[in-house]
Image 1 (tube, helix red, strand yellow):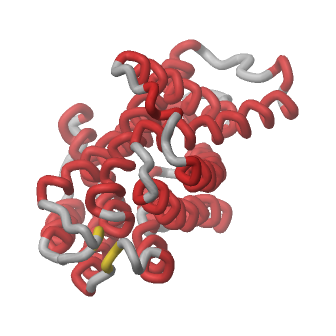
Image 2: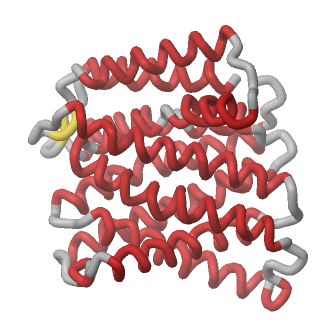
Amino acid sequence: MTGATPEVVALAVLPAILWGLAPIFDKRGMAAGGDPVQASLVVVLVELVIYWTVVSLFYGRAAFSGISLEIIAVFVFAGVVGTAIGRITIFVGVDKVGASLNSAILSTRPLFATMIALAFLGEPLGPLTAIGIVVLVAGLSLLAVSKGGDLEGWSPVDLLWPIAAAVTFAVANVARRYGMVESPITALEAVTINETAGLVALLAYALATGRRDVLSMPRETYGYFAVGGLLTTVAMLSLVAALGLEEGRIAIVDPLVATAPFFTLVFAAVFLRDLERVTKGVIAGAALIVVGAVLITI
């Protein structure tokens, strides 16, 4: 990770810690009777209340000026894919396999980012990247037989949910990086557009599927998801700020953010003992995935 400045490291590690803690509240909310669509809406609403308030206070009418329609479209796309689709799949994953396993598998997103670059950009697959893919797949295999995660049990097919979330986040992060380096947009403006688009997509989905029941879930679930929203608000802003720095290359930022599973494992072992099992296999699998992700991105 040559070239990583202290500022980039700090901005990338902060989301890892916060996104390591957020799944703990997500799991509590799901266990209390919450729903993936409800959780996604609550998190995004909390984010937007904060983002739009800060944008109004600091930028006023000058907000979003000088930003082309192309860049706005980039962040709208990232919001629909990463915020709407990604959030729903991540909450389903937390509910089915547990916070610890879900967080670990989410760190496979560099694998999918590399495959996207290989397929659409013709970028070469170097030997270190190939080794990283093998290590990462080994980590996934170890997780599949770890007998950890949700105490109620899960099947291997349930792992497809966090894998799907990893794919959406990989696509969204590449789009965000492009938008940040190709325009004068600020991190705050970027995440505001991103999350607003995500909320519109989520509301459209809820209306189209007749999901009015998201307003009648157990009261405590909203509190859990709101805390997760606060953590995500700071994490998202920090991530986009890191990507917006000249030294904030995906190859530096993504591996640092990918350490989130280790924080989730620690938090889950302490705060989710009644809901999840953190086994040696889960720890080893998470470690392999993070090592594989680092090898792929560097």
